[in-house]
Length: 407
Image 1 (cartoon, rainbow, N blue to C red):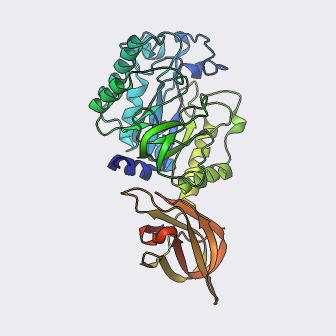
Image 2 (cartoon, rainbow, N blue to C red; image 1 turned 180 degrees about the vertical axis):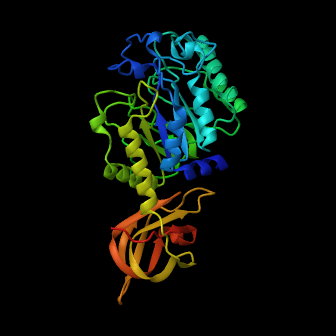
Image 3 (cartoon, rainbow, N blue to C red; image 1 turned 90 degrees about the vertical axis):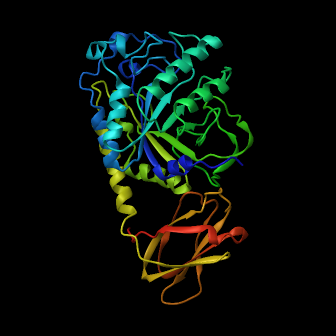
């Protein structure tokens, strides 16, 4: 297994982030990925652009990181790139003097949000893919993004469109690591994190942190085999609206309900992965009110559900971890695994001792634990629980907290 980086463990602590799909496609309703239709530079003009409010909303929702689309498949650069004319520098916005990436990075730093940049390796339109010339273009643009905006925490590569294209990956990765030695790379070539394999925001179980293959693209169901098992935390991405990544005037009715968002949280963060929820800022350059409201309600509900943690006494050995507390109703137990050398636990169960008396009963059975397992079960009155793991690994279990009971 590969060496586990401190930055990978930090990534798992971020837990919840917000994706922003914004660019020239925002201003061209009805376009789809790879439809090859032109989008004129004159259309890009977000006259009320307010990236500060985007990131303030991220902060208020309790998310720890954000990811901005810098260049999507259409090739439009959200910064004044020297290597293409198809960028903000040739649009009406701020008379060609604007820089979406700069304003985004500045806002992230203001609110202490980790900075993620999305870049689509593949594209159609202004530059065609043809070997070294394209690799040069690719590297030059990545170098701009990684040297002109200070420390970048996360580089998000989209595999869609690259299924049959050969890149000089060694050269590309070498340049990235040279520009930003501590950066995390999503899912491709020399990854530090991995895609969960769907765009629904959910992880299956078991959900191992150490894997030997990667899901590459929604267009390719065959996994990419790794040379050796690697420690690769997973990220579950999804859309706040059901139909589009970029803003549309026609799908506000599909904004996810609070109940669905909480379900995604349990199926992602609750299964040891990160959750990345996309919002498409509108043509003003602002967050749509429906999406903003949903995100803030989601953050408040997370805080409500996992606050008021009860005081516990813990005793552990290889076979069992026993947790004692004052008698009360509980329906959540949140645990983690000591993962500095990888994840080893493959199954566990939680037993509760019913009050007023009786032997322990099983209230929850799980598979992997990893960074975090949110164990939710029917409410029971108890004052003691046992956590029992396979392979006598209970000593590796850490109680994060038991939140106070809520209906």
